Image 1 (cartoon, rainbow, N blue to C red):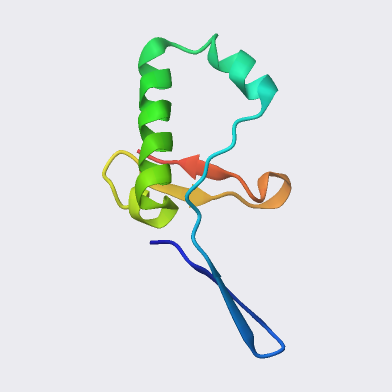
Image 2: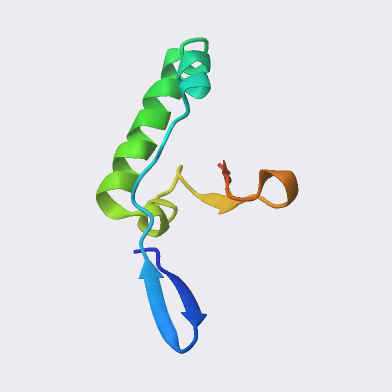
Length: 79
């Protein structure tokens, strides 16, 4: 599972990422995307919510990486 370790004043906080939030504008744009891509996206979301981001990124076809710069906080799927 994915854990983000943050050390502040000797306190460790571990967070597992297992939730995907889709903005309302993204939901509107998804309607324009080909069905096979939407199916894969929904499959990825289900996997993240069930197993966590770290475990999902290990699944062949779902390998992804964090983006940098202006896109920091977002992830990029690589096949």
